[in-house]
Image 1: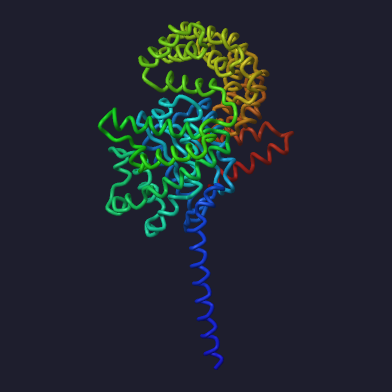
Image 2: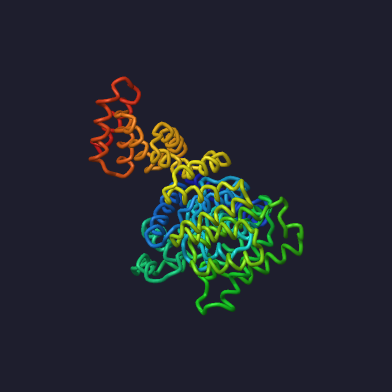
Length: 481
């Protein structure tokens, strides 16, 4: 009798749970547009946060192996600033977003699991303003926030994360020999289509992304404008369909949706806050001058100077192109003109200081770099070049001061420890010289040399118990790993 009652009770619980789940499903379906209006996503998933982070790291590894990332702090810091402004509008999110520029002419942008957002240099070069950049970033951030990849992985749960990362990389990197190698194998090939974004994913990313975009002070016209440029490549450009259109389907539906939203809410069209054009134009200039075709860049900047002889960014672009071609004297003359028209720009000052440094004019390099750091006191490369310039002029104490500022700002700036070690050696401070050289080789993964220098540092740093304890811990980790 007891057993029968227990069975009946359990049956009742199962029915109640099924009813509750059905009701929840109905609520999600019914109120999905309402959730999206507040910036929430209606996606469901079974991939844990940590699994998604692991997948994101493996995906990033594939990107770094098969493509070239532009490691330019000025460009990356600017894009990150725009991306973070949008990220702050998310209701809640478990991931830290990171932004990258891929050196590829093809129009493409994509988001990897766990908040890795990529944009191709070709697409960035085709943009005219920050509003267009923000539109693309908001859409990609929405894909991550709605966890569209995680949702699709539910259908591929039997595949390991490493294989999934390769399949995803093959999809988003646009095919070709390199990415074909990533997705080799029948399992990978069979899963590609199921992992691609659907029309519903794209619609949700636009609906949710627009909310982030507007709240961040940008206008929907930017997204509309850049999507039309991407579409125009398909219509009027090369026969090959832009990668962006293959990984982000239904562009006509997306354009129609944004147009409709602007008809309903015309105030969404333009940014609600003032966005100066200079910062975008500067990173755009830098991208074209340093990472695009040299001859095309020179023609472009010369055409601007023919119309606007006082344009500081055109002079800056021409200076970067000249520096890239090894014409250092011409570059310095052009940097001077750019500074004349805009004397408070730390990026122009920094590049001018770099040019002086590599020209061997260390005194001028010090003067210009100090000016750059006055405007941007946390610039890592500024301190690096300043420290090296002081070393070249024999001012080791000033070099130590600059390089200590550098490694305090960025403990992973490996080369900083090498020159800091050399600076300490110049003033006969053997303990700190060996200690910093130990840090340098540790970060380089050279265990043998790291252990040698740390042991030498212990012999000299007898009056520094705190530093000695730190060295002992490092030696223990290095010799037991």
